[in-house]
Amino acid sequence: MNNGRDMTRPDWEKRIRRARELAAQYPAAAEVLGFYGEIAAFQREIFVAAAAENLHADPMRPLGEQLVRPAALGRFPALVELVEKKGPAGLAQAARELRQETPDEWRALLIKNSQPNGSDLTHRFFARACLQPMAEYLAFDSKVQFSGYSGPLCPVCGDKPQLSVLRPEGDGGKRSLVCSCCATEWDFRRILCPNCAEEDHGKLPRFSAEDFPHVRVEACETCKRYLKSVDLTTNGLAVPVVDEIAAAPLDLWAAEHGYQKIELNLMGL
Ligand SMILES: [Zn+2]
Ligand SMILES: [Zn+2]
Image (cartoon, rainbow, N blue to C red):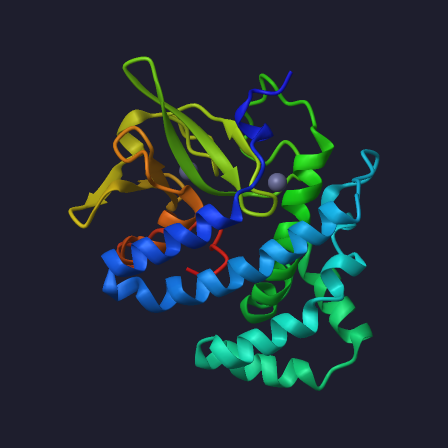
């Protein structure tokens, strides 16, 4: 049996809508959220194409090795065009260079960057924009059983967590982690570092800022890593992957205080 949450079909409309709402609410994040909204709309197309083509994951192979398929690769030129028009300067420049390359080179870029720790941040952005929705679709379709799993890496694809989520349960909140690649969500203990397994409460400080009452930095003094959590017990309207991006000032704060993020989000924050 799955634990229920992971069965939820990814809702791209909800993410795009939330990005618009948060952009209006947080002018400082409007630019990054505006661009995220464009990328999310692009990602939705890949997800829909994967569903329309009735693709399936091979349970015998790692999910990360199964992402570069025509439904994703075929839309790479559209991504390059979108980023060239709407992306921030650095990415737009990279897009202009990528436009000159061949489909074989694009394919190689996607394969190289579909592995954890693959290559540079810029190329990783293009690969993740293109392959995340394929990973989400295959993860959703595969219905891998992971009830009872509570490890630090994604039970479906093995990638690192992007963020943590607190969901209402009883009088409090239940913590889970969301995968940075396939967005699978799985249960995780509240007082435990997903990077180094520190479990001393005193070494796991939580930081928040007034502007983002439902988002916190969950840090670890032992390994100096952190991720952000989105608290759905205090803000039921939040869409974790989007609210995590909107709360970018917390990432700046964490970096200034010597913490390194476990995994940067799609926007490189
Ligand atoms: Zn995953
Ligand atoms: Zn740690």
